[in-house]
Image (cartoon, rainbow over all chains, first blue to last red; front, top):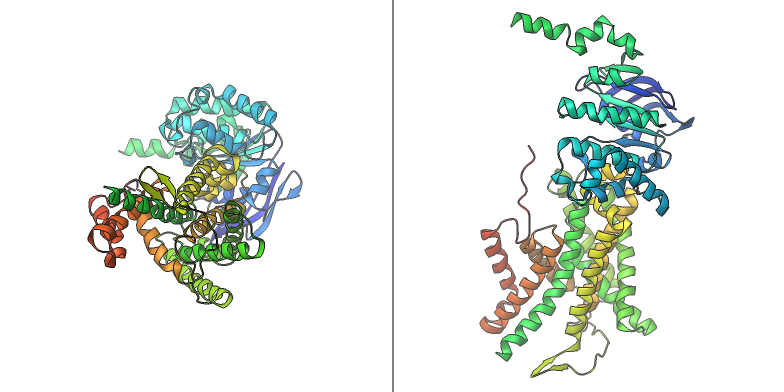
Length: 244
Length: 296
């Protein structure tokens, strides 16, 4: 459904992505892993159109989308969900969701979108008239995912839905992400929380220094010694802990 | 007592005009981070377009306001697209690029003045509308042009508020004002919203120009005075705050009118700045401004 072909991109004269190639199949959850500064956010921006790639191609549903304006890409059914802190604070929950459904012209469809989002996240229905500045971190994350769902996309790019959240809340949110996928959505999940991401995703890419360092099924990666050592904390962290 | 009420009425109506211009400036700043220094000329062009359209078509006054707003709004859209769009890409407000925007604003203001001079010459022209006899309210005689100012300004303010609060486009404009990247990801056509925002801001200025026309003469140099007063008004109210801009405008108008009436008319233009200095000393963020904390 989504294919990236040797994408190179960056800011100004600084190159961040050095030829990333990856693919996401329909109705799958694919994880994109990597630490800070490995190019995850740059990659997301390149796919959603906020950043134009220098070289390479992005294909969605078989058509080139690189170089298109971001709103055109949303129109084609590919939506980037930002982190919870990127909700519009001075707007109510309902207004935020309404914006997510900006492109939905039909009243009935809009109504259905609202119902679907409130069904996934009953908390948002309770707080629909509240300013989103008054929401908790977990609720904000739910709001951003809900806002992404409002336009009834074919695929969503999730930018670190676990960022700065308590483990229990991360679990709740990941459960719903799993459900959204089972009900027909394709997802690219960008995460630093490798353990959680590999529980949910079927396939994963590990980014390092702007290119794909490792890739494989979630199962293979969990059992991979390198991944254990560098990302799952089983190895390196334990060593540090013992030495301390 | 009557004298006081007269002065307050004059102050409030002029203040409405200041408020309307300040509203445009604040609206553009809050949405696009452009401190629009050519807004006085937009106001002047709006007034001249009003006169010209009236001479050509003989439209009635309300229709004239609407036509002048649309024409000037369109000019604003073109100006933004040609000049500001290139600069705002690099950031605005108090950033380095913001400096470029301010200088561009002065340049545009000079160009507009000279174009207006070529078309309409330096002559001050009266705005040829007749409103009839002043309205008598008890002992008071209120010129009808003042009532027009108050009524039209109130209508425009309510319309702007309703547009931003209750319509889909208004919501999109607010989204763009807050953060353009997020707005893009909502599927909003951001460049179009930027044009709309700038156009509406300029249309507000044009309305003010047509409203002041029947009280003052319309002339090429009328933009500078109003720009300074409107900036004072916008800052008094809290720069970028929309209700604040109108409140600031009313305060500037009333203070100016009372000062001219009781102290001396020779220093009429100073009172607005005395007010500005006092407000900035007591509340540096303006009356309705939010104290902005630097980002952590």
